[in-house]
Image (cartoon, rainbow, N blue to C red):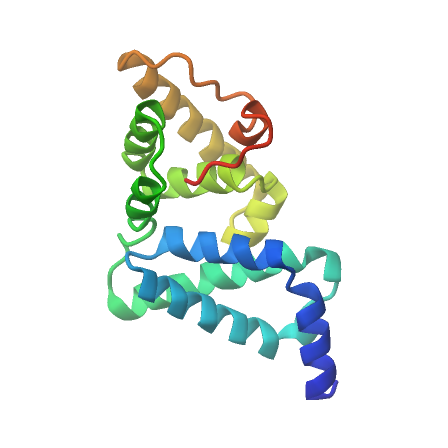
Length: 184
């Protein structure tokens, strides 16, 4: 495929919504805005270079997020800091000036183990299916469902013990809020 054809195909697939989703995911993974920008740029470049390996254009969203995920893990390995998984999320959350109960939810969510927090964020906050999360993270579908179940249980128990029983974990928060999306 010619470079111009690859660029046209890539531009057609990278909608504003998918770009925004990839940006939010990078921002959640990284500690600083600059790191998130670098990760996004690196991931988009990698996606364009490997576009010929995308077999189905319908799976572009999860394919791109899996590239972001792998590029982030590569960076962590190079920097030998495996605990950087989603620490930049708190800063982004507080910048948006959410209500006290939402800030408390963030605090409890941030206390979850990284592996559970990432799955919960992708499922509830970004609306990805367990199959899409599996593609993004490289985990099996059953591992994603197990981490989601465990994360829900821990989150529910912690919220309940602190008197916040009004947070429902059955549906997705975006649905419960009338379509309003929440950032993780």
